[in-house]
Image (cartoon, rainbow, N blue to C red; front, top):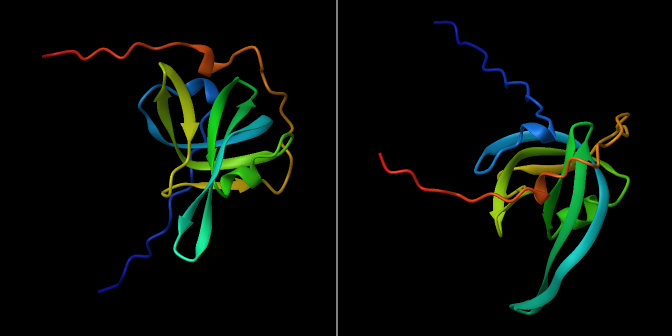
Length: 137
């Protein structure tokens, strides 16, 4: 019997304006507009101190912007004016608004080439407030 070669699927890239609450598995190419450290604390982890860092970064593409929550080593990658590739990103809800995040199942990597698009800053999806309603069937 001949074995079939399993090939990896090519990633499908989304645009910021296609994101919606409670979704995951998004691949995006975005530009970092700003980055602000919101939490930096060390916690003892045995003989060494483990640094925990969280930064809020405004990222976007030619369709809009959204806040990205960068954690720990992701903070270094998310520098302003950097083009980054987000793989397997998810939408978290925080105080009724959408935040983009990448957990341990995804990747944040700096793009080799800077993006050529101009970010549409007037369409910030994190400024839209959502009220999640449970519908009983």
